[in-house]
Image (cartoon, rainbow, N blue to C red; front, side, top):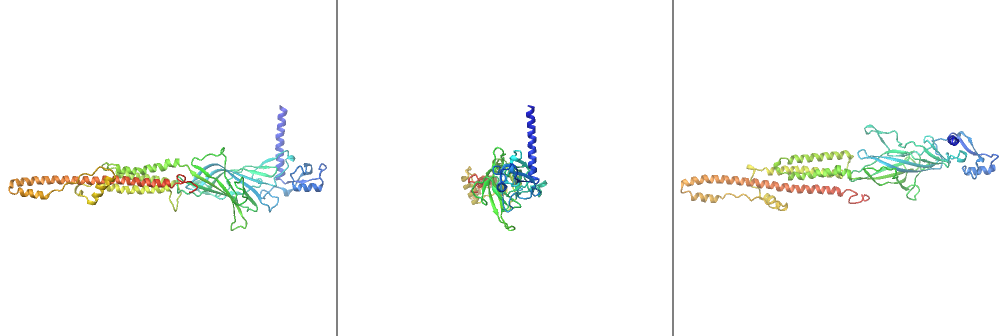
Length: 504
């Protein structure tokens, strides 16, 4: 048992020695060349020819025919593209894996996501024969030691204290190690927290769908030096027009509680800028997100609609309660609070207003108009004394004859009866002969006329109160219909409810 442990320890130490020796040979100025030794079965000419064709082919050129020699010009330079011919373009395949949607800030218009990059390329300077290096066929190297593609996010930015823009740290990739294989294949999987700008359209908030664009490209190399490709493309096009998509691993992806992913395609583009004669390549990733409507509906839309509908209660409340105007003002202030809450969640929009904001504005206008109608109805209800006169015929016809039938209200009170002056004169003539009865009748006539006038004034007040009741009921139905129409217009205009998101 002790012997096995010693062998295992020696093997681990030997492996570490082989890796250190291999890294020294690859990075510190050593190269592999053909050497005609006594054990080499090949001739000088044939061996050099086969070695130049494929230095790693152990079947054609055995290990006994090659050796490592020190060469100062062979020292690895991380600033030089790892290609055998300078005019040759280096192929780099890129892929993105989405791990989490951290935040989509509508106010500051940026998207924060947790991503994992995937870069694949071949480094001709990092090739070796595993049989000559202790069987090591893969090593892990820090990205600062070797060449790495300078593919960056064009819309990358960072926010510091008090939302101030930070210019440093433009590259968000974590400096994770790179896996290098004996044939020169390099695989780099750096994770990153990407904070990219995103143009937000809040027109249909909270039933909105946002599309955030992330554009990746080389900052220094044109197409003839660095050929960018999409790893695992979805079409057979090579170069501009090649398409793919963002990968999502169900085992690693953390589902967002606010956004649903409805699109995640990408496309490779080639652009010729005015500054440069050659084409620059970039991969544009489009992440299409649809908002979950449950939470904003319960916390913003539904309370607003319920508060706006309370305006109907101001017309149902009896005028003698003395709280009609107060209730109206309270509802108006509540709508102002909801409007302020909406403005804090949405960015300033120069040419349009969110649909829910339009509903808020329409509701506030309806509530403001209802306040004037409430005051007018209170004025009619409290018409009394000298102001209680017989209403015009057209007003009586409209408010007392037509609208009660339409609104299904009980019939109006009977109209007051006018004094019959002709009969009074006749009565005076009949009793003019007897002076004692005449004066008694005159006093009684005065008392009866006075009482009849009071009855008529009370009847006029009842008519004006009834007119105020009819107007209250008409305004209640009118404003309820206006609020319902504005709410239905808001719901029907939202994409994804009555029509598909693609048509939007």
